[in-house]
Amino acid sequence: MSALLTVHDPRGYPPKVTAKRLAPRLEALDGKLIHLVDCLFDNSELFMQQLQGWFAEHMPSVRTEIVKPRESWVDDPAMRAKVVKEADAAVFAVGL
Image (cartoon, rainbow, N blue to C red; front, side, top):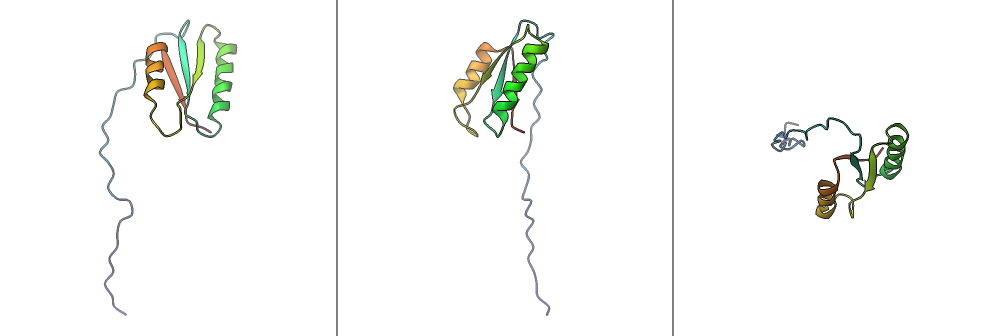
């Protein structure tokens, strides 16, 4: 049985990726406010609470605040503006 087959590549075409520079690193964290951004993935709230506890125990001069977007997988401009306006740095959690 000789038949011609058409094979499609399921990988598709990758999008073009443009590199961006990382944010500048802070010299020190003492006295700074770090927003711990809970991105609403599984267990990320618990992880952020534990991270906040770690900072309280090991770096008490660093203030932390847990912030969350309104919903998962959706950009929240108000939350982003809050982080930019208030925080010196941010840590984003994507779950465990």
